[in-house]
Every structure is written in structure tokens, then in C-alpha cells.
Image (cartoon, rainbow, N blue to C red):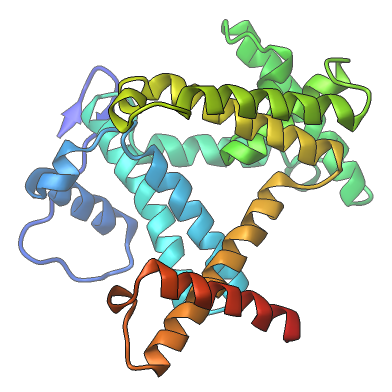
Amino acid sequence: MNISDNKVTVPVPVQGTPEATGQLDDLLALMARLRTDCPWDKKQTNHSLIPYAIEEAYELGEAVQSEDDEDIKGELGDVLLQVVFHCQMYAEQGRFDMSDVISTLQEKLVRRHPHVFEAETLKDDAAVKVRWDEIKLEEQQAREARGKSKRRLDQVKAGSALMQAQDVQKQASKLGFDWEGIAGAVDKLDEEIAELKHELTDKSTAEVKANISEVEKELGDCMFALVNVARKLNLDAEAATLTCVHKFKSRFGYIETQLAAAGKQLEDSDITEMDALWEAAKQHERSS
């Protein structure tokens, strides 16, 4: 079906049970079928899919690090699913379709590689990077000409909240909006923690839930302030948090292994036993 006004093509749903052909058109038809017949897929919006797109990008990163081809293929497919899913919904809205997305990408790749497709020559990767930035600036100027104004912090790239927080602070610091030393950042962290405690201390669960939006704001302020401390120490807040996540998973895995050796599952244990095993896991880390 074509939407003639915008020349957007909405894929026709596949009939029956499709085979895995490896062809993009067949994948688009499969996605169209899911949007027609799957209750979960039907209720999704472009905004509701945002967390899944972010999650899949991270899972792809982990798969690439694992060097497991089957995992990598699966995660690349999951990332592709997000692209196909979004394109299907935008096509349904008559805005654009997959061919528009591919054409836009092709034009960008050619435009950003004049040293490959034109007579322009660049001697090394450093020169390529300089030219790349120049072309991106030209693209931004074109966006501004279309009314898409750019402010100083718009250069912060999309990423996890921690990554964006650290980059925002870094860019603001370049413009003089920063403490001279770490003491100011630490004092700000203490201030934000005190404000969070004020929202939580001597309050019932019902009172906290009734004011949960304010609690969320204070919690965010604490995390933002903590990221600032990391930045002042020249530490990567994302890497530090991931280190903590991996450490937690390792220690919790130790608990599960020890319980299994005793013929028990996590559900059969209690917090006292698990806490004792947690301390044992810490000792095991130190001795290994």
C-alpha cells in the first residue's frame, strides 16, 4: 500500500509462516505481520521502544567483547529489529520508510568520505578526522538554515545517563562553569545527599510514594553530583559503575554457587545466610 502524498511505502504483511530467507524485504513483511497480529507489537510506539533500542545496543557491545559469533549474530539482529520496527511505525504514519532511511545513510556516507569518492586526498586517519569534523559542521550549518538552532551543549552525544551527565559537565567546564578543585564537587554531593535524606527520613512508605516525583528529582541530583566527583578525579563514571555491576554479579554468583553446593537454591535461603556468603565472597576476592 502506498501513501501517495509522501510516497511512503508501508510493507505488506507476510501471509502464513515465513521462512528465514535473509532478505530485507521479507524481514519488513514479517515486521508488518507482527504489527498486524501480535498484541504486544501492535501497542508499541516509537517512544515506547526507546529503552529497548538502548538496551540492545549495550547487549551488542557485550556480545562483541565475548567473541561468540552466535551471540554477535543474535544481538546484531536485535539491533536491526529496532531499526525495522521504527521504520514500520513511521511508514504507518506516512512519514518515511526503510528506503528513505537507507538513502539518507548512503548520502551521508558519501558526503562524509570525499577522500574516497571524490578527488580530495587525505594522508592519514588524523586528516580524515579533521575533514569529518568540518563536514559535520557544514551539516549543522545546513540544519540551522532549516531552523534547527544549536546551543553549546547540543554537541553532547546520546548515550547512557551517566555518559551524558559526564559529557555535559565536561562541556560546561570548558565554558568556565565549574569548581576549581574537587572540594566544591564533594560539597555539592553532600548537599544533594542531605536533600535526598530530607525527602526520605521520618516518612512512611505512603508519604514517600505520594511525593515520589520529588524523590526522583533529588535522587537524580545525587547521581549527577557523584558523576561530577568522578569527572574531577579524571575517572569515567560509566566504567566505574560497570565495574561495580560486574563485582556485584560476581559476588552474587558466588552466593548462588555456594548454596548449590549445599543442595539449596537462592529461594531457600534468607538474607542472613546470603549476607554471610556475601562477606565470604569478598574474602574470596581478596585471596584470589
